[in-house]
Length: 323
Image 1: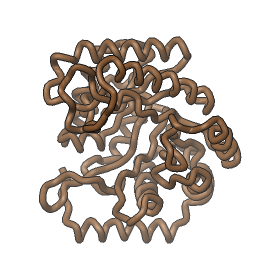
Image 2 (image 1 turned 30 degrees about the horizontal axis):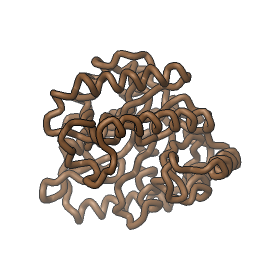
Image 3 (image 1 turned 180 degrees about the vertical axis):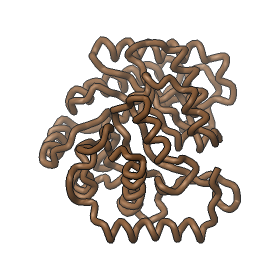
Image 4 (image 1 turned 120 degrees about the horizontal axis):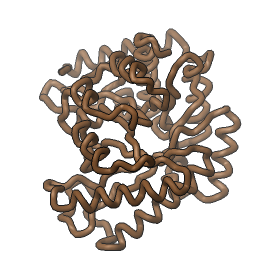
């Protein structure tokens, strides 16, 4: 478990930035030499979708991106004209889409106490919550088809202090959504999210066991597990996961600061040993997306922070022998 002072943290980030500047990231596409589909979530770079795609393709050398939002709008809220423009931009840079990073089931569970992690002024309640989530699901399926991907990301509702009384019903809702996705040729991929009920590897293993649908898989995010307090997310938590059901992976990192609080960090500085994690993914035959989700903003902007994190991610891929 890694703890780091602010001075050494900033010094390490500056060193990575210097290396990044000294060794331009242009050149052969990254995943042309990788068993993985190496990607980045575009809005972690910029809300200007054309610019984000330019950086991803021309600077990072990627052929894949993950879509969550653009032009300061959720993907869910894009007009048909904006979708057509986004499709043109993807074609312009030769980029393909790993998945639709939808907000599906980032919602309060109806009938349960309001979670401390969800919005306090949510106007929806009761059956209206699930009705709205059904609409989010169908919209996400449409978006997946429009952007030529077969995966939609979801969550497991805002985290409850005691989920036990609602767990069976929540699992049934996940199963229902997975079955609907299956009818549409789509895979529903749950992310372990530190503010939701499935936050750690151990919780994810339970959820996957409870929802055995072949149309239900996992977006493994060890950084989120660490943020929830699972400090052995890799390798301890990883060892408990059903590897064949991992179909997406988010790449970010976190450290304990001098006061003991866990906070986001560049990919190559933190509790997660990404060199070892990439090797472990390759060892089990994983050949799907590894997608940079920067989150850390220590470089002052999302774009510059993503540059530093991509440099660290690229080095970890290279050191692991997967790039």
